[in-house]
Length: 258
Image (cartoon, rainbow, N blue to C red; front, side):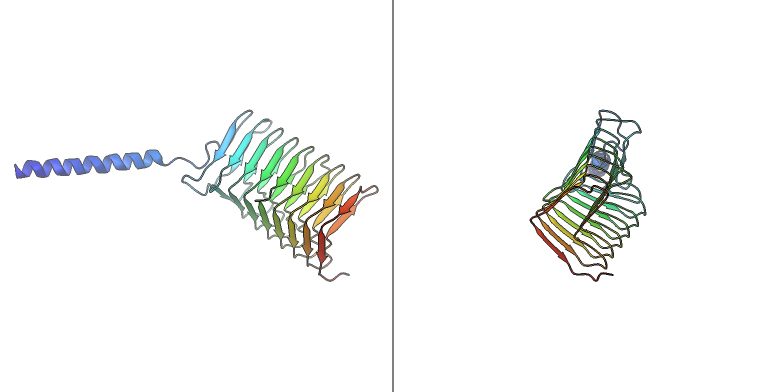
């Protein structure tokens, strides 16, 4: 009887361990439910393991109406683009995106998108922007809870490049850049809006708080801009018809000039 009890107990223990093991495997779901969304699909990043996700999200070429949601507590940590969407898509980050490779961005997008960062985006490489596009007519917001930090040279926090037009860039949160030429808000194109009602801090040489280059770009500052690098300006707007600049906030430039 005692041997049979022993066998029953051991069998029961083995069954319990096996069940626990199987349950544990089943409960480990990927932090990202779709790494390559296509038209009409949603990719969600949550805080379940593996966290951080080390792959990132890249929408299929030609896709539209893709939705990406990074939930609070979720993390993406990669050496390429954290999130890439094409056109007519939506990205909301409430988690943490960390980029360690050169020339890669936290969020990369084309045209007619809505991009919102309410979490953190951190990049450390050269030409590694927090949010980047060469497209048109997108709405880009770093919200009151959002923080974007870049450490590499020529790594703007939010940048429209290559002639992108009709975009609206707004910082309502915190932006910190430390690299040479790493502007906080930047647009190289026409008819863009660059608005700061949050806090901007840059410390690199020629790292401007807001930088626009092109025609009819509108610049508005109602927040705070602090720049301390060599030849760094609070606001710079260039072009044959650069557009209006309105400042009702605070701009402090403490670095040396030529």
